[in-house]
Amino acid sequence: MRDRRELYPLKILVAGGFGVGKTTFVRSLSEIPPLLTEQAMTSASVGVDDTVAVPDKTTTTVAMDFGRITVDESLILYLFGTPGQSRFWFMWDELARGSVGAVVLVDLRRVDECFPAIDYFEDRRIPYVIGVNRFPGSDAHSEDDVRDALALAPETPVLWMDAREADSSLRSLVALVEHALSRTAVAG
Image (cartoon, rainbow, N blue to C red; front, side, top):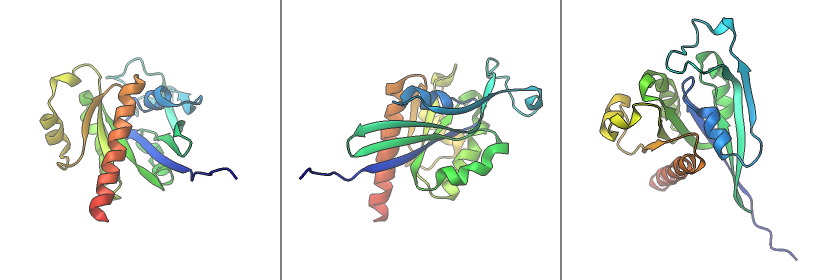
C-alpha cells in the first residue's frame, strides 16, 4: 500500500492598486501558463484609469489572474491576482474567501492607490505583507518612511521586491506565510 500524504492547498492573493505589478508577479512565479484576464484599455478608461505613472500600460485585469506553484507533493500555492480598479472590487470577497493572506504591492510614486487594499485586509483581519515594487525612486525611501506613510502596524512585514523576478516575488510569499503562521500562533 502506498503512503498517501495529505495535500495542503494554500490560496494567496496578490493585491494593490492599478498598474502596481500584480499580473507581472503572478506571471513571474506560476509554473503553469497563468490565467490572465487582461483586456486592452479603451477610450472608456480615459479619465477613469490614471496612467500618468505607467504610460506604457495598455491592458488591465478585469477579473483576476491565476497561477500555481507546487512546493512539494503535499503543498501547492494558488496565486490569485486581484483587479486593481475600484469598479472591479466586487470580486475581492470571493477571491479572499479561504485565503492565507495577501501580498499588497505598492508603487511609492502612487502610494495612495494601495490604501483600499490595506483597508480591505485589515478590516477582515486577513494577514498581509507590503511588497514595495521596485519602480523608479522606490529605493530612496526607508522602511520607516513607508511604515509612516501607510500607517502600518509594527508587525506588518515590509519588503522591497521586483515583481518581474521570481526569486524576489517568492521571498514575499515566504514572508507572507511566515507572517500568517506567526499570527496563528499568537491567536492559538
